[in-house]
Image 1 (cartoon, rainbow, N blue to C red):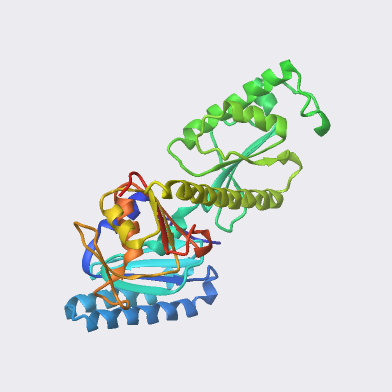
Image 2 (tube, rainbow, N blue to C red):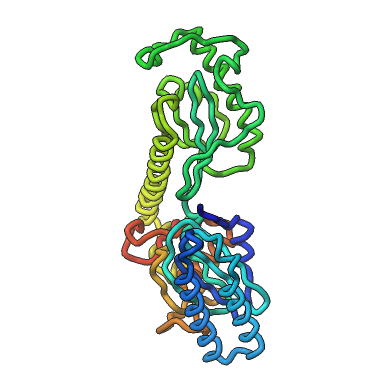
Length: 373
């Protein structure tokens, strides 16, 4: 079983604003199998040693370095902590404390030492939904399911959710219709099914209120179209599985909706790439790091794609956004692309951490701007 702590927007904002002379960011792949974590603990121990060496080489206060080393050592030795892991671990440490996030995606082992946290790998976990709700809708059954990370679908209890169309309408039976007749719905039947769908939407509304995860619809074509016409949840995916869930196993559902999540990711990236191409001609998109840094500092970035695997060391001036490239990682520099992402987050922009193949150019970032810079 995966145990995940996906960061909230409040978590990201807090991490993005925190500054400390000794701020250490550590990322490592982990295994959710409790009996096989010894290698992960060794990896963390080695990464922690690397961070301490960088801090000592930069001349940081020995007491603060010692306190930070103690926090990381305690985590390495914490048997209970290692019992419950996911596919990767993100740690953000200062001499005062360590914050940890267990995430479902696979991250590369790395350590960054600076006066601010390195967030780009963590952003991968929130760039695209790793979880969703699934509405399995048929005349004879209604289920809301949750799917997350690599876990199978699981039923979610929703108060007042009808069990079937007959239950919603207060009748003993809706009659039996074959699959071939489902698209041939009479006016009276359609009105009844619309009433049924409205009752489902009404029950889901308070449960889904304030949530932002996708809702994936599994229903035959005719009933699915009726539900979409009355749906009030803004994050209902524009496509679903056009299949009655009554003939699908939970394994079939899991496989099908995972394919829908992958499609959502791909279409989102494709739309951003098209927008980037459209705006580049009028100065409202850039893949230039220096220009993106100035735009992020001015709050001009609307959407930012960043390469999760590429790091460009250096610094960015606080007021002007001017970039100073560094020759190598050290405690005196940080990732410039990560800093552009941090400033974009703090000014309300959307940041997506992606693989190189998802970027519209060969650069390590692509920024869509609110206005021309």
